[in-house]
Length: 427
Image (tube, rainbow, N blue to C red):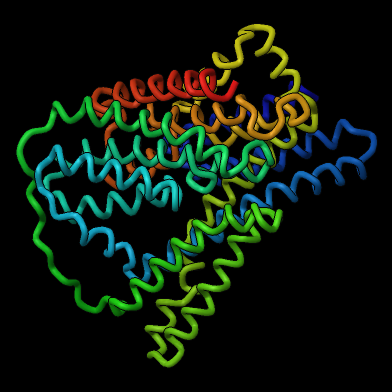
């Protein structure tokens, strides 16, 4: 059984990694992998009803993550439909390259913590297209955006899907992850920013601005209301969980429902097309449903490996082979630059128990940092990098030459900073 499960998972994972080569969407590969893993598992188990109960138990935790992501994506799409992000872009007036890259990097870092690294990358690349005309000039800025988005997502419970998984899974708390990972994550961005500043000279050229005809534009007052309410809804999710002790997706659903009511009141008397464009229903149509199903497939597959006790065996092997916990977690972070960090973190959650490593343990917090920032080392190592690659047609080897060494410097600097802070103040 173990051999068959690992073979199915390995083949499925290769299909996901080689999506562009085999021309099969990674979501399809992930879903079939998840289903086949459970088919193989139940085939070797005599008690079919027990396996069915185990699957439904896993599905409860998986659904919490998926509904959380769906709610967050919808809120962001609603803000974008109202052109709410223009409130940010209008604040940037600098054209000096060195100054601008620091502004973009820091803004991405904090915006990613409030939204998520994938959404922030898309928003910031759209912003850069309005700020920098030259594609070659823009590429270096986009590389910093990827590093900043992943670093910003690592220290926030809602900034990266892997950190969200650890938060929902009970491995980390919102207050502790913010307090302990903020400085290491900031260092992971600051070091690359300092290094890249020496490469930049002169000013950027702004593209000409032309208003598109036929585009439905929200009023300025509506932009502000939806932007600030949307950001507030996202930021209040950790507060909701802290005080109610309900799962985070419940807080996200509350924020989404309140925004839904606000938009209904705001556009209730508007023209039919305007109301339709600015509605939650329209935002739900625009969210990346394929990504949600991708996470479903991956998490189902990992749950099957966990149920078969394969991950537990792997954890013991790592402990016996490498031994040092910090080295194990840093290795996982480096692997996340090649392998998607979602299944890596999901596998680690199954490998180590909360009994042995309780909430806010060194293992889980360091994992959140390493899995989040390690994905920046290669362009394919994170959702933010893949999005940037697609939007700006970034060459894989150009990224290795220009950005990878910057991300690697930041990764190790932040790692050692976390270990030092932990040793000095929390041990």
